Image (cartoon, rainbow over all chains, first blue to last red; front, side):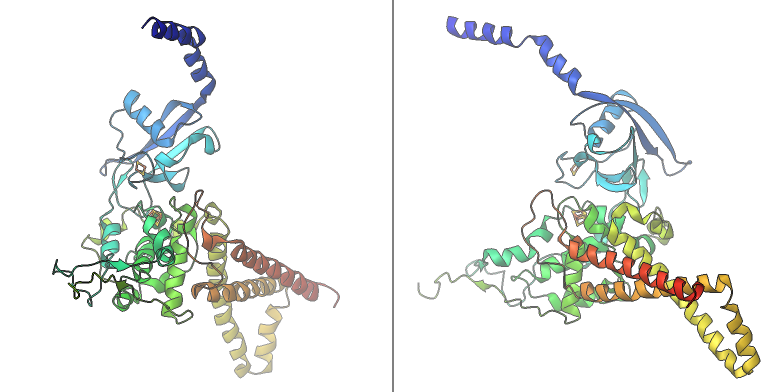
Length: 281
Length: 152
Ligand code: SF4
Ligand code: FES
């Protein structure tokens, strides 16, 4: 016990309480002006500016939460995971769609950081936007595995697909999508055509179509082969430039269009079901 | 596509519209190329309509044809033709690149994404295609200017 107390005392001597504060002082780079878009959907919108102290690691979401805690509790923000996983905190930061929790202020230029709601999403309040149109486009391309040859009802014969790592590699990056809507906000076609499904939905159409457990490519192609469908993509690449998860939706769209134009063969070989030896038993 | 259940005014709320075309530089070279491709396309369409009108003046006899041709012999006419040369060169060369990319060629194969997640489709082959189109358009315009304004 005495030994433990001695060690604690030694530690305290080597790490005086003041040190921690001194460290913090060093890390406080400066203050920034955080410009936040404000609207309640009824009166004129405007920007409110807050002076926020920042550290090297302060993210835009941290700064917004600081403003909400200490300056104005009525700021409307949507967030959840704080680690680029839930896709809730998308907004236009200095004019470009980004995740607030994934954008460090130290990476941005200048002493003013402006936060606006994502373009192409209807505004609800302040930085919160309505995702129902976006999710509706996602649902329309039937984002789930379909295979009418496989019966999935009878639990007795239910079994697994055999899928090799190289089969997974074909769709893995597209399955990283967190539905944050940044690509939808950056797309110039979405900006003018409300019926265009957008990069997220189209890249998900590709994701399910190259999954060798799925055989509904034709069905999905019928959905997107439309006047407002996949042909409206002109490869501006902005979706891939802003995607925070490396999904590269522009790549998925071009590859899917390649299949549809017969530029490339869809050499998809359907996955086989694992033999559970049910017949032998 | 099936339209959403939202009313049109709700769906349109906060759409960027043509404003989204402004400031193409914020999303990189691919967006700049998209912007130029569209602008040159519109410009060439206008030129094409004017060109059909110009050649149709032949039916009005030699005098009418010469009168219209004289329009292109002014300084403004020369500048307009130089712009046509630049627009058509960029639009064709970049258009050939886009025909391939729209078919999924020259973009690479999907794989396991690694941080910092550089998008495969925005690779240097594509960027060089854009730069080559821009350089060729500039060279064609210089040559055109030399022929129209020079001593040749
Ligand atoms: S593709 Fe990327 S940017 Fe688009 S919703 Fe998915 S994660 Fe977000
Ligand atoms: S809070 Fe979840 S992605 Fe930013």
